[in-house]
Image (cartoon, rainbow, N blue to C red):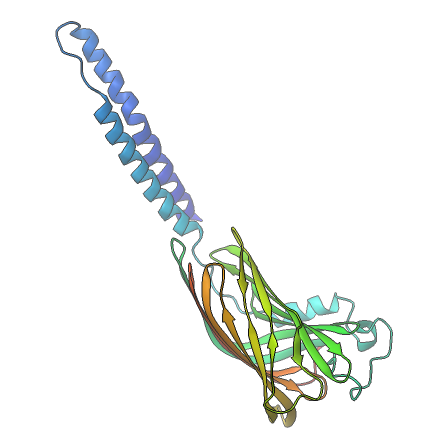
Length: 320
């Protein structure tokens, strides 16, 4: 805070002093002219005024730039709070499967693809997030340790919200379909970059993540559009191709859980960004809970953004 105040004060004082300089010079010249009236030729003052104005603008702009860099410097990275996620879940009114289903009995696992048990799950996490933007500078964040992920259920819909950092949450909204079909029509990221809140919403229609009775190796399209709500806001086309890579056994604690491995390959275009995103998710074959996620995103344009991370489920028993 001291640096912020100093930066703004320096910019204000410099602009005020240089802005007042032409007035002070003119006053002195008028006094000198009054003392020698009729003896000296008329003095051209406009070159001095122009030069002073240009210098004033340059210095004021420089001061404002450095003040902006100080004010918008990246915040220290703080880890996600497992206790905070559990407290929020308990306050959501979905602390039991019956409450989450609105008092109705949950469908049998064999009838639909999920939903998983509600609660707060723990994932081992590793990765990095690098962002570089003109004027703002760079923001480097390292992910390590573990992160909480909260599952909430609302009828046929359920959400999986991973708190990556204290101020970054990634929420995937799933929809349980007939015939063991799983859809993910909406993916929302809430984050803070350079002390500015940013919400990115990706909507996919149709949002089928795993078709019913899909054959191994099958691929299907997931047309998506992403809108980022920050400053002016931008919209990007994100055509996605999903592939059912295979059915694998994923170690979770002492278990080896059957899981569908789905790879999503996305092209980012439109707006001011372009690049690609590759994301692989291993969905538990019985309830659709993500057991493992490997994410690699690289985009460039007005800002260069790199996101690489891995989530691995520690236990299938959630905290409530």
